[in-house]
Length: 310
Length: 277
Image 1 (spheres, rainbow over the protein chains, first blue to last red):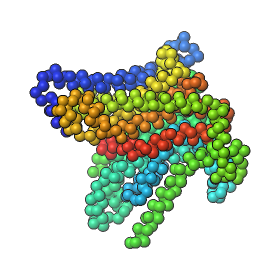
Image 2: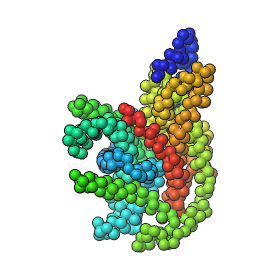
Image 3: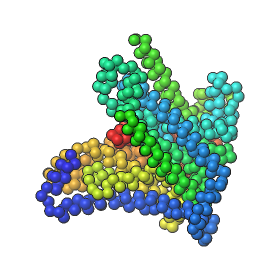
Image 4: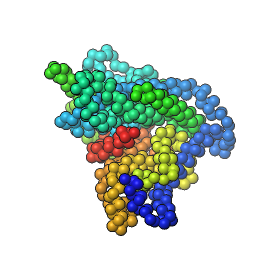
């Protein structure tokens, strides 16, 4: 279709008119590119440079390049090591349940049934909320003495006494992850559901005629068919979860005693409260490297996997 | 055979019901909390339905803070930023959908990367930039930044919507003597109005919810947005849950209504790219 446009528009036109096309393209892209460059890429670039400077708001008169000093200082902090380890827990234990439950929900929603549209609208609503609000709501529900979750667990006789969800470091980490799982299931459910609906029905019919049962169909048809979607969605999600500080910020604010900080909240705290921009930027640069390594590794690994499957 | 199918149906019904309760309960709970009088807030046993319903928390929040100002600020900000990012994304999305040109992949990649990197690295330089532009504590700082932040995502979504409209539509108009830009606004845009509305709603909701840039730039009452104000509630009162729950409900209602309208199109916009890939 594209080539058709081109030929209709360009057939027999002198070359300067074709280059006018180029001008049109340029003018249409200009506002977007200009704004994104000036207000996203330029600050990012500056931020990366700050990582190598002693940039603190308390002393703006004395800014020098100090090499890797910020990285050394930050990495020596006990809070950094803890946030790094927490980041792995945070990503891994949020992602797996989000993926598994989201997958099951998508499978169950694949076939049309009465009320499916309304059901989807209801399970969609966490998406309309900000991480900040979700953190607040869970903070209220997980409240140690009068929280509704403790009350429910006590009523169901699953526990004997109230759990100090937000004041015990281990429980606090569990809490933020549970809230994040709650938030993220819908994303997977919707992405996977869309992929499932793109599988031609004939494939399942043929499999049924061949006598394949549900589990066989799932592993021989469904999963291989939507594998590309699963791979891409998961990668995007990992990156996104690592970069997602909002929920932790309002649920525990990294507490108690820094035990629920992940790299992104650790970094934000340095910007908002510490105002040590150099060190914050160093954490950011470390995050970029982590993401880069992970993405490369992931892409390579999934390529090999694909080659093996087909 | 019949029994087997029943088991599966049973599993389906139970699983989907439990999941629905799990998903909806937090919102139900904050709503119920907001209707409870202060003295019932922390009393045992917990009531899953308030014994007495009161709107005191809602009235109170307008008394203890300038919540009406925050609502107006958030509204203006989200509408303005949503509108401008939409217009800009309309142009860039159109060009990216319809033309092949050198550097196209790089442009798309540049937009894509903004969604992937920890954008907070730029927070401090942005703060300094805004202070140089004398925009701190003023809404235009956020208008500008929110517009910019929404451009990449809106562009990609718009590109997707354009790609689903056959280019024969504007070809026909152009043969009839329309210029490309007239064809775009007179012929194409009316066709994809639902998609455009959905994109606007998505951008609106993102701006409405944004927290960290707003915390960085805004400290004055008259320029606070709802999230900034709620953030200051935390430190000020060590969380007055009555006021906080009412504020949460108030700030979530507009986005829920908007999402309910646009849900179908947002889902389409978000999923089609990855499904194709």
